[in-house]
Image 1 (tube, rainbow, N blue to C red):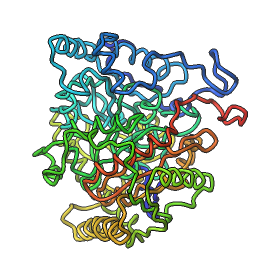
Image 2: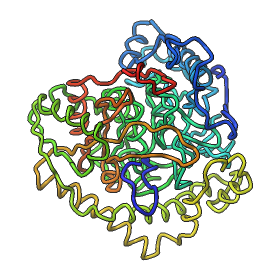
Image 3: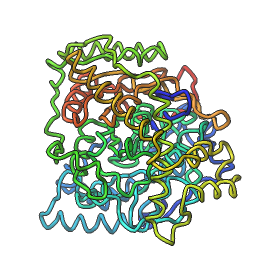
Image 4: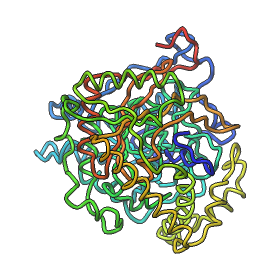
Amino acid sequence: MPDQPSSARVGRREFLKTAGAGSLALAAAAGAARCAPSAPPGPVEDAHRWAVPAFELDELTADDLQAGLASGRWLSADLVRLYLERIEAIDRGGPTLRAVIETNPDAADIAARLDQERASGNVRGPLHGVPILIKDNIGTADRMTTTAGSLALEGSTPPRDAFIAARLRDAGAIILGKTNLSEWANFRSTRSSSGWSGRGGQCCNPYALHRNPCGSSAGSGAAAAASLAALTIGTETDGSIVCPSSACGVVGLKPTVGLWSRSVIIPISHTQDTAGPMTRTVRDAALLLGPLTGMDEADPATAAGGGRRHADYAQFLDPAGLRGARIGVVRARFGFDDRVDRVMEEALAAIRDAGATVVDEVEIPNQQGLGDLESEVLRYEFKAGLNAYLEALGPSAPIRSLADAIRFNEDNRDREMPYFGQEEFVASQAKGPLSEQTYLEAVERTRRLSGPEGIDAAMSRYGVDALVAPTGGPAWVIDVIDGDHFSGGSSGTAARAGYPNITVPAGFVMGLPIGISFFGRAWSEPALLKIAYAFEQATKIRRAPGFRTSDDLSVIA
């Protein structure tokens, strides 16, 4: 797993029916780990690929959709219908990705209202009338539920929208549904299978259906890759945006903690959690980033944003953005896979060719032992944060505390724990309040050594504009018996510091996507987007998924 500490698998946090269809629970737990059969029963291109039907909106960007809406080619109601049909065809049926856990029964009505606004000359911005999927830990006060994939929260709806969900609605976006995830954002077990939840079953990687999409924002990554929506949103504590983005061949941006509010999002850690865009292009990530920023009194971390927030991040995109830049290579995050290293060397050559100076062997100081400190912090903060979230749901909440969740899982082992347990839950429940000195010392050291005395110190010493490393390795075969098989990655330092990190497709290992991560100081999203966009435009590596059903070498390209 990416950046795995020794004491706990913290890197896991790396962490339709019709438009009127409501909650769609997927496969029962007994069969939920099975993705596509080894030989597809329907028409296929060959013995090792699923023949996915042609799709009118396949690979289209937000700009493409806006152009079509402006010209009258589509109405937003058409986009909703087409995406719901796509979800029915390949997420519920066909390859059966299990990326979408629930669709919005009001999506068609919302689209019709937004179409009326457009007809009257009111277009709110680049998201107006665009369908978006959000992760099932982001609260919506509508006819959808918010469960973090757990049966313990089935039917639960928060009393108000998450701040970012409300901002989506204000921007004219259509929340099409919720995406599947590693249950409880992969903070339940030390040997879970990323992308599995009690409600949603096992999400599959659209590049190779028997391989893992990585977690915890597995559904958002798979949905973006497979064009189940124009844009998606995930959440990350440590790697849960960048890892599935890398494994599913899309762009993922983990913002600075506090750029987007976390209120009414089921939490792990108030010092590390953030939601962020997961899209097929850097420009789409930039278009989604700006409208969701803002000060939220319910999330004190947003106060630090001040004048460092921007309503429009697309303004920073520059195809020549690498010219004159200094990029620091964090070699300590290389070496876990020779094939990944070869992809990275080709990426570094492209960065040089685009006019950047590559500063090799950049050492980030003070990183030893931070994984263990992170584990301590997250266990304390998860207990406190989850209890507060559940209490805020009010008396109708299905469960009221972490202790209740533990009991529910024990009472429903056949549905909730058929493959792996709840070791992280138990370890968190054993922690005391956030006033304990052990916690206070751990959180202070983690943030200081990762940020000011880690990333900031390295960037100042070497005079670089951004740091670069491989995001992770190729997707592993789904394994519900022994759990995930992370080979390596680079998410931990930026995650522990609360600093931004963007991953962009960089190449392939035997047909499986590999991402490159650019990360840097707090609030440096403009610089990182500029650099990432220039890399994307110089390389144009990404290609659409092939829905392979095996690793037969003759069909890997």
